[in-house]
Length: 478
Figure 1: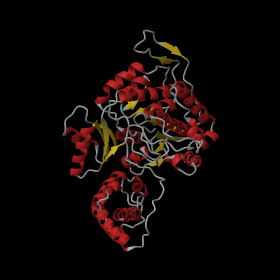
Figure 2: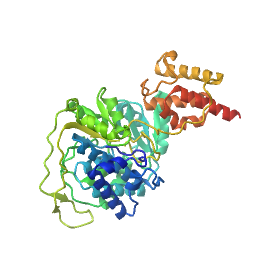
Figure 3: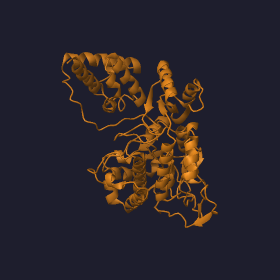
């Protein structure tokens, strides 16, 4: 399940809300928790496409991401997809705990808000930087500067790592990475995490977060920062511990695959974590239902193909009672409560469920695939710019120059780079490389604003980039 990704689109859960009682119940529970914390209803914008889409702070965005993840999980179960395990990235581990029944939905929502508030109280001038190299090289890069708070934060894929640390030092790291020819991209997150700098926030969260009943849950939950299954672990301690720990998504995904998981489903709107999976295990099957034109049909096709997946794992048996840990500020003894509710569903298919952190924390753009501590992605579905005709000589000159620039960088003969070929979908140019190349185009034509135009990455064709260069040069000269 995803960590911090872009805010979901308005109306993204309308169909699921109409189809499934379990989705309606989950959204109702999140809304109830939000209202109790003085926040607006979370479900309204996710169900009604024309609802108010104004950003309302990180707490609301976290809960929206939670709602999308949980709703996708309930759709999977309702259609007969049985998880081998549920994996969460960064704060996505909290969504996984709720989906598995390890703790009630309302308590997960309250804990997500408490986490955000603790991070805001202990905010610091930190940044996170995605670097297109393996964890060993990224760790060595951070080690060159030798600061205790500058660390390798996430190992997402064989060539995608995230470094977290003080903002000024991250700028030094970015310059060194550029000198080495390593692609990098700063992540736009309000709460840089997974560094020892978050120790005070972690202590604050352990002391202030509400404690509630929790149990073993219905399905396995695998923690990428613990490096093991979640067992008899207190959710508050798990969420607090992750603030300072490294996220090892690459190793978790490979361990699951080695144990028999052959399909991974992302419980989010766009392929974020599944991009890490595809980069880590070539040829593995990844499904992102909400990115399909018919999410339910995609899930049913998954459920009807049991030969595509690994063996069914025995699920842990719920314990006879749940536990409530006393608050550190309280002297009340440990007490027992009613067992966690288990949603029974006939197992038909075995999959590993992942979901879009991230990367790190909530980004602010409505987009198909943001960064989160994972593959760097960018908003799609943006309007096409009013570009000049592609028939003029300026366009042809720029296109030829771009073919040479991209071909030299990628090792392709320029003539093989078609102007309408998808850079990622057809040529296999990953997001970080596209960011680096767009920066070189920006420098070549002295168009500094070009490197920040995420729609050019989304479009992913030389035609779109060439048209934009011609248009901006015309505007500058005019």
